[in-house]
Length: 545
Image 1 (cartoon, rainbow, N blue to C red):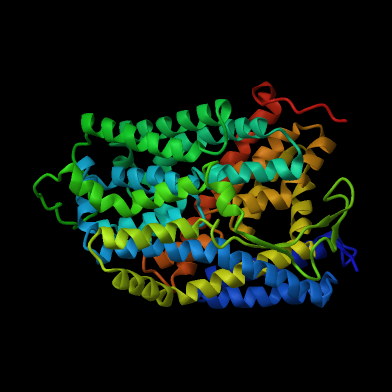
Image 2 (cartoon, rainbow, N blue to C red; image 1 turned 45 degrees about the vertical axis):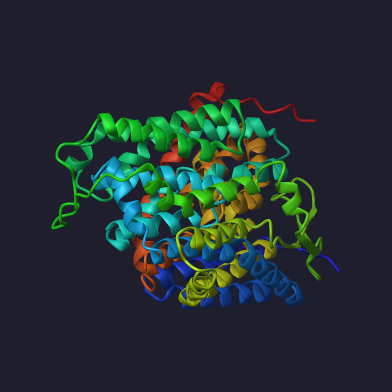
């Protein structure tokens, strides 16, 4: 028996939209206003989503349960496993006593806290996002910065803001491929368009980051270093996305920026070096050898190497062949989306994808497992570190499972489409609000690919109705979505867990919310420029058949 989504259960668009938004707004309220612990807020909002889906939007209870099970399996394999493995790699490095060497190696490039943020959160974070994402960039970079002496809460804020630069091309270009799947538009056209929107924000972001941690006079004191970072990453992002492919944009961009900044900062140095007020001068030690630096960084180098290798053409098919894919009973192809969300009715697929080997978490875990003995730990001690990591993060895991359950219920019940339709009803302003739809989608699902899957087709349909370029609006969904990454519950929870700020999720959400909204509006304004004043700079859509 199939079930058709109802986008106006009250016969009143305003009331229906408010009802659809209730699970999300309740989560924001509980975190930001009531300051409730994240896992409890997630559970409450999850329960509200169940009630709204069944009682208001009329989704059969059996389908609600199936959607929940689908979300929990996805969360466990694709998100929770990745986070546990990423934090495990960091814990192994700390337990083996090599984090001091990492700190010293970064200090060897620069002692300036402002520039260290660009090296770690911006450039190295882009490498990790491109290699797999899934919370690893925020988890690893946040933990690294705390280990280097950054205030934990500010480290979490800075990592969340910096992680917006690479998200649209994260996971080996998976968000772009998702857009291709749901829109049927050419991959290189979407890749090129996203690569023409986001470089402008990549140039701005280093200034934005440093302003979030220091007064404006301290920002302008290092403007050459900020320009070098922003222009370096933006140039590589533009060139690779437009002329090569979407898969390696972040990895090449992040690694290229790291190397470029290491050279640039060896020639240009800020005067004076900026540290936090009251912070002691860095301890001067003997220069490290290349071997010492390589050994200390080996867990993270192994992580990047393993994750990149997992995506190579020679390995990827083999690991993906081990995945167990089972249609979700009572849900697969039984939920029907209809106009105006889609051009013609189609049923929503629902597949349990138990990618136990293909998940990014598996190569990350293997990197940690190998790094332990490489750094002098026994295999037993290395495994005990993983067990301790699992116990410490148990509440974060509960929150992640609840949030993904909420996201999947929202998707299959049609509540996501109701919120999207409300924003699409904006006429001339649609390029701005269409961008905010992507922002909302990532805030809801926690992934740019998830937002593209939810709203990519809606963007194309609305663009065609309004006479806009559908390639631009599909790309705007992905580009705008990156700014929602810093406020989605998964990212907030990961950032707090990685920096030891558990139970401060509400404070962190409030701290980054203004940045998220402001940067999303900046992206929306860039999209409006392309839509109305520079349409010739965007690839033309294929003829409509």
